[in-house]
Amino acid sequence: MNYEIIRLAIVLTGTAIAAFQDFKTSYIDDKLTLTMITVGVALDLLTLDYNFILYSVGIGALIFIIGYYFYKTGQIGGGDVLLVAGIQVLLPFYPSIHQFQFPFSLAVTSVPFIITIFATSALISLIGTALTYGWALKDKKLKPELKDSLLTITLIALIIFSIYLFSNFGSYQIIFLLLLAIPSIFLSMFKNQIMNEIIIQKVSLNEVEDEDVLALEKMPNLKKYGLKRVATKDQMKILKKISREKKSQKFYVYKNLPRMAPYILIGLILSLILGNPFAWALLK
Image (tube, rainbow, N blue to C red; front, side, top):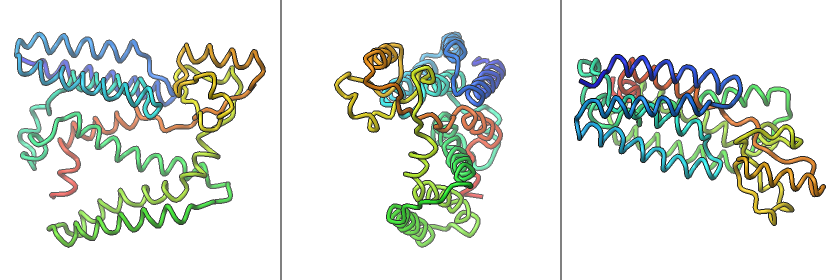
């Protein structure tokens, strides 16, 4: 007995709350995600199934270790890492309903459920991020990076053409691939403008929040202080010291980064409904 209904209820409720918190404040309460992890591990232990426990907790630990590295380098939020780890230990396998869905072999057995959720979330976030930043640029003078975008377009075109040439993909599958390509090209084309005019902001010390990502490349004069990229409590002490010494009263911060938890929620729901959305999109 693996308590599937209880797991589903907890993971949906927890992820929905995390998505709401992230959307409203860009912060996910650690108490929420740590509770999800604790309950997930407890339910795993109650199965008394060594292989089940090893698979669930082992992959959860691997997610945490890899995610922690990306968190420390400012590439992902700490709350997002704990949320994904929590989903893994709560739902280590596809729900049993997907045993009866097409295509069974890919939707259920080929890849871990958490990878399906993560990949689906990444696709949704790619589209959502392009739309969000596109809207933010609507009143600005556009500054496309033609060289970068041309390289991206060429690479994507070669990949899609190769897939079309050497596979049985039809127009439906090619449209799906284009769905991935268009936002990628847009983000590549306006990468520098989005970064410099929307994402990175110069703010006062009081506006730097816990776990904000510092744009250290914009503050080379502060390198001697040994600042790290993520604004933890220790880094906040250093920023206060810098401010007191009047070396800098404002700091460059990545303020408008994509908020991932809402996309994780959408990816989770789609994966629960479809099993493996990519299998449905590419094989139907």
